Image (cartoon, rainbow, N blue to C red; front, side, top):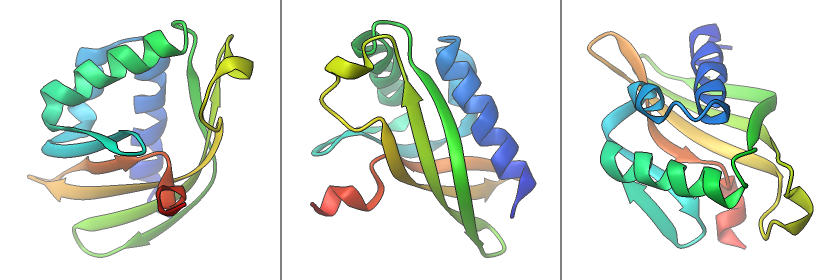
Length: 128
């Protein structure tokens, strides 16, 4: 497993929890895509930052993302991450979407740095 990417995901989760959205953007490529919810995507850092601000508000500023079991498939400059993503929040019982997800993330190496290009916490459940 790529320990660097695992560490980056953990740091990004911490930035989300602490609502440090400017810091969070350092983990994304300029052309990154975030699946906000099924049928809605944010493209580019500006839209992704705006989306995370709304996501955190949706969870009443109490969202805590963590990762469970992970598997990575890696080429020289691209990594597909399959991860059990767990969300917790004070309003978790009132939330419309699953708090236990099978996420897919795509990381690519840009100028020697691993950056998230696709952030899909819904994984293959988008096919449902």
